[in-house]
Image 1 (cartoon, helix red, strand yellow):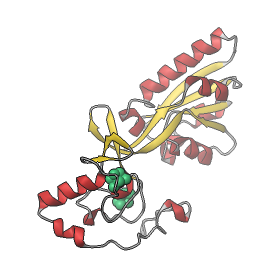
Image 2 (cartoon, protein in one colour; image 1 turned 45 degrees about the vertical axis):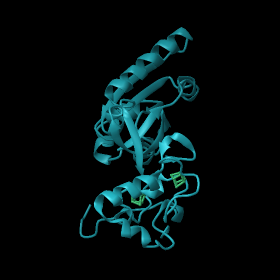
Image 3 (cartoon, rainbow, N blue to C red; image 1 turned 60 degrees about the vertical axis):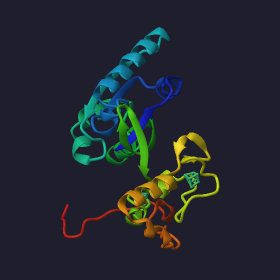
Image 4 (cartoon, rainbow, N blue to C red; image 1 turned 90 degrees about the vertical axis):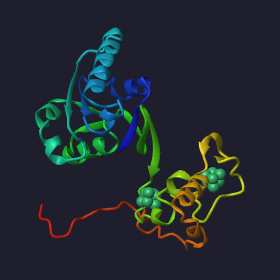
Length: 222
Ligand code: SF4
Ligand code: SF4
């Protein structure tokens, strides 16, 4: 899932204080699961803003509405009436949400309430760990199903650096060394021979380094 955390409240105030009619739009998928931008969190943020604005003598209104996903037109279209009435839309979705709103409502001002941080796996309750950076050409078949692009601080493709100590990464004792994990996994699978295979230069042309990407399913009509 995509994870995102709410911005500092003062930053949100600076972006929104000038609006007379503010609409807070929640998203009930990834950010609802990570308890940062779903319906409940959007309503809490709207209440905090109402209170703070009232205390500071700022008039106007703060309304809120939540859609299942802000990354699809059909859901954004369902809140057209509320969006059209607002001076400013504050999105609590991951950063795809506000950009989707900009695409769908080109004349409407939209700002993000969130900082989007990663694609993560729920490793334990309320803890997400980054597992993929969407490089566009997956190589984990050769690394025991563990991604060295997302999980090794140096994105090394052919074994650990010299800083791997006791199974931990040199950037922090709190961070496991991805290559230690890859070694342990391949050992458990009886596939340590895989380590003798040298992975050549990675294809990065399918990654974001080649510019914004588009995925199109051939054979499907809009
Ligand atoms: S190799 Fe690329 S696509 Fe595969 S998990 Fe890692 S970042 Fe994601
Ligand atoms: S210690 Fe391990 S995870 Fe950290 S940079 Fe080196 S190889 Fe990568």
